[in-house]
Length: 122
Image (cartoon, rainbow, N blue to C red; front, side, top):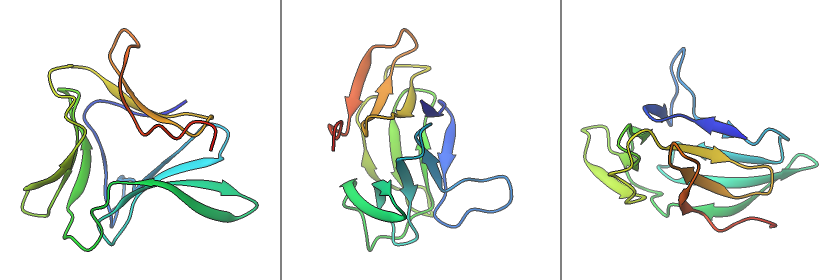
């Protein structure tokens, strides 16, 4: 599974060394921090990108999306104001996986799921 480790970040306008998306290992799904402020999971088949989940934060100024070391996935504005969160803080060392089945899941260090997009099999 492609992973955004705790402390990793996605940027809408990535600079050198930064990323704006994470792909599943099989390349069929992409989680992307878009320039319009929306975090979107796409199914990528035959060069077609079909959105199957989003944070519904489009149209908002975004600085980055952080997979924090406390286990919370948070989208921040450029001035570091949170505008969306997975509400999974308190699970230090958790990480996000973009799975080959189309689900995006946050797992604790002992591999217990604590949040998911619920998009498996789409």
